[in-house]
Length: 142
Image (cartoon, rainbow, N blue to C red; front, side, top):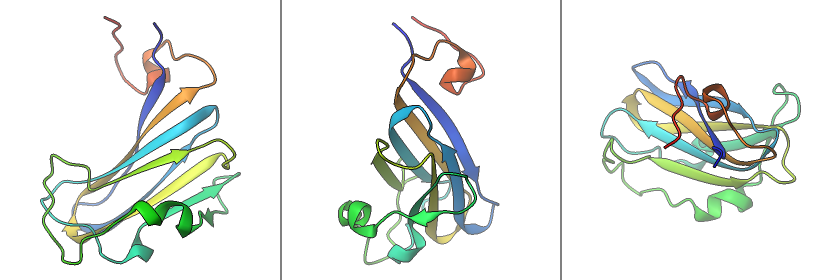
């Protein structure tokens, strides 16, 4: 059985930052799960405008993906509640069919911390058979 997804770390913020942005090349994939993590036990920014999904064909000029298509399912806390580092702070599941090639994610926390945005890109047009194709330094099939 062949690996059927690629894991990519797209962006890591500075140690004392409250926002990070990362762009992902999604060409050849049908589905993307974008995960936003924070190193500290802090909450997310309660301002929806600080959490943005955008798309582009050239990785330069981005258009915001309509908020009605993704923020309907995004419920942010009314208070800056602490969220464990063991959990992703925000997860976006995106159907990539019919989308532009690049997806950019902007993630904001309620306090300064170190944040990471990663993607698990799946449903590739062809199987992933090597470590590099799977987004890894090493690859083992068991």
